Length: 273
Image 1 (cartoon, rainbow, N blue to C red):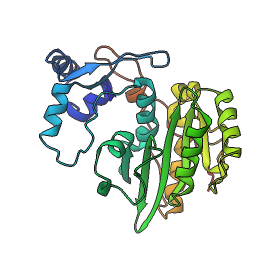
Image 2: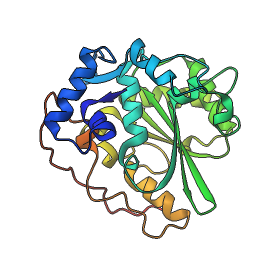
Image 3: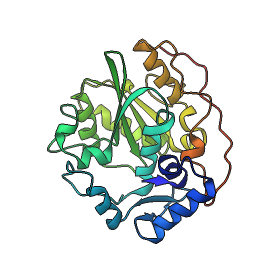
């Protein structure tokens, strides 16, 4: 799923804003894409494929084993997209995004070993950064509503068995939800250090995007942006910067018609590795 500004970047970046707006509305009118319910936590319009649009996608893919195209939890899925792509999306870094949709729909051979299993947890995303022959991977989790303890036990065991996942960014609705997940971890009996899970509040993320400070975890007090930048530096990339402008204007700005956006502030200067 994507909002208007993301669709512009993917398909119409070289067109005028008004031309792009009309093209996207035409796709909606012809029922290739559909607008999704915003719900309690999502403040702006987002789109997904229709069955007709998905049929067009299938014309160019032969590796889809599960036919899924319409999100059942739009706010959850959209914030997972924002948390995973963020400032990395348009960077020139060597990265690979494994989204929840990919992990759920494509053949297992598309992914590293054990990223997809017959039963159990499917992460909201996994991102791998590379520099030279070195790699570092991050998990993505989003919880806007609390699940039962067994589901979290499955989540912790999933990451406990994946030794190449260094850290997990975990977006939660509030501190109460973090406290409950922390309690579930204590009874899960897994080897993964709880400090490897970097928790972020939803309201902070909606306001500051990748400048959001981590509230609990090994990098508490540091921004999402800076964790990624210093991870790249740990791989040997000396000039690891995600740029001067923030993609918050693309992902989280409420837009119904063509407008000129003002770039948000870039990542802070804190060094943590």
